[in-house]
Image 1 (cartoon, rainbow, N blue to C red):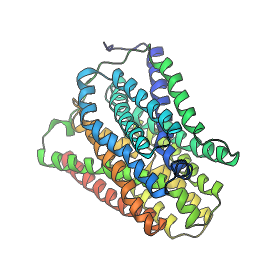
Image 2: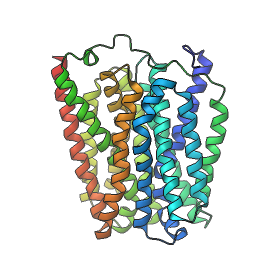
Image 3: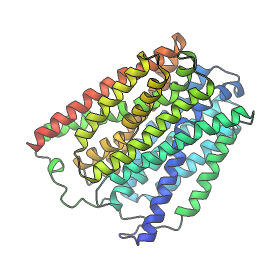
Image 4: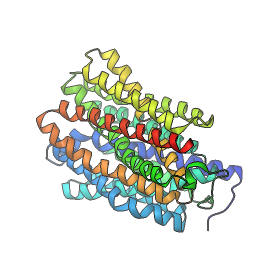
Length: 396
C-alpha cells in the first residue's frame, strides 16, 4: 500500500530514483537513432528500414498509454514505475544482442510500453508529492536531456575506438539495475491528492471552451512530441549529408540541443515556481522553436546553426511539453493518471507516425525529412495560440 505522507529523506530518495529513470529514458529516446548506421550493418538492411523499426516504439506507446494511466489511478504508482524499468531493461538487452529485424521491432515495442508505464507512475507521483504543483515534472526533462547529451558522445567514443555499439545499450541496462536498488524500499505518496485551491479551469464553468482546450492540448501532445522526435532522429544525418559537417560535429549538434534543453528546463522550472502562466510560457517557447528551426534550414553559417540548435533545445525540449501536461492536469485534477495517459497517447501517435513519414521522405532526400519539422512546429504554435485564447476567455 502506498503511504499518504513521506519523511523528507524518503521523499528525496524517491525523487532521485525517479529522475535517474528519466536520465535512462533520455538514452532510450535517441539510442536507436544514434546507432542507426551500426544497426543497419548488424541487421544487413537499410537506414530507412531501421527508421521503420523505430516506429515500434510508437506502437508500444499506442498499446500502453490508453490503459496505463487509468490503471495507475486505480492501483497506485509504484508498480507502474517498476514495470516500466523492467520493460526498458528488456529493450536494452534485447537490442544489444538481436540480429533479427522482427525481434528488434518487438524490443522497440517494449521501449514504447516502458515509456508509457514510467510516465503513468512518475508524472503523477511528482505532482502528488508537491500538492498539485507541476514544477517537479519539468525537472524530469532536465534528466532526459542529460541522457540525450551524454549518449551521442558515448556513441561517438565507441565508434572512434571501433568498439561494439552494443555497449551503449549495456550501460543503459546497468543504470536501470542500480536504480532499482534505490527505489525498491521507498514508499510512494497516495494517488489523486487534490490541489489546494484547484479551482478556475478545473471547475467546468465554461464546458465548451474546456472541450476545445482539451482537444487542443491533446493535439499539442502530438506536435510537441513529434517536434523533438524528428529533430533528434534526423539532425545528425541532416548535418552530415546536407550541411556537410564532420561526423563528430554532426553528433555535437545534438549535444548542443541537449545543452539548450537542460538550460531551458532550469529556466522554466524557476519561472513556474514564480507562478507565471503556463499558456504564456508555452506561446513564447513555441515561437522561439519555430524561429530556431527556420534558422537551421536557411542558414549556411555553422556558428549560427549551432546557436539555433541550442535555442531549439531550450524552447522545444526544455519542458514545454511537460508544461502543457501540467496545464491539462489542472483541467482534470482528480484524473491525473488518465490525463497523463491520454496526453502521451497522442505523443505516442507521433512516435509511431513520424519515423514512418520521415523514412518515406528520406527516400527522396534527408533534407525533406528534416524540413517537415518546421511544418509540425507551425501546427503546434497554432494549437498553443488556441489554448491561450480559450484560457484567457475562461479567466475573464
